[in-house]
Length: 298
Image 1 (spheres, one colour):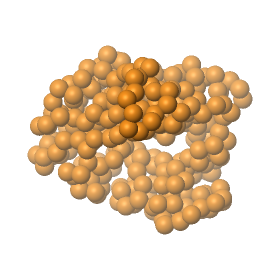
Image 2 (image 1 turned 90 degrees about the vertical axis):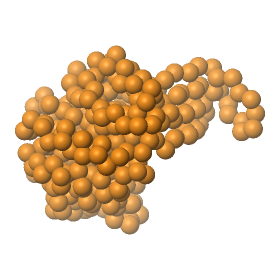
Image 3 (image 1 turned 135 degrees about the vertical axis):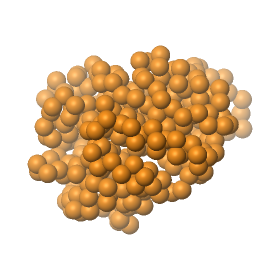
């Protein structure tokens, strides 16, 4: 089974505005609410691909209940821990350019973190555990490392979508997959990489430091992967970029889905890149038909 952890979920309030002029009154051309957060995005794309998962983490108050109801309406199983306060509402203003206003989120008490550890301790052996997204201010910056140390479950296939110290801290636990983009790789190692060869060199370094599979996404430059079976490169699919939000999460979901279906590493990378591109080429997260269309182009 696949479990995604989102420490700080949000209800995204999306407003369509043709032109944003600060200081002026605007009337939205359209609006919608959608559950947000990197782990939630992974669960949503997996659901679109027909791969079940359980979304967990922390939610609070009426906003948290709306997040759960909306996920369940999509067919996604939820198992969130309830905490005091209110889950955050993020405002996304979409026009010629996108403007985002992200709230801070509720305080997560220590006992709630312990409850999450207990919940995850009972996962079946071989489960995929996805840790993705920003760390709320109320939790320590090394929370992924603390969580994995507390679980002491090397039998889990851990996916850590992180960068910087957060990423480096999980490597001793031999995560099954990490997926930094090129900017995050720069942040992690204090670099300014300009070539695929440089990205490959540091992807290989991350493997020697503990990661089992490393995917480095490079936007329009495609992605490379280093695994036990070899080194692979997949160019980006052609299309018009509409919105790149969620593209990295879609890549993670695409790779997990492909491996669940028994695909080899090369095929899984190709499917992951197609999933990321499919999200970038539309408003909202990739649907299975979008991915199939890209893959059919060869």
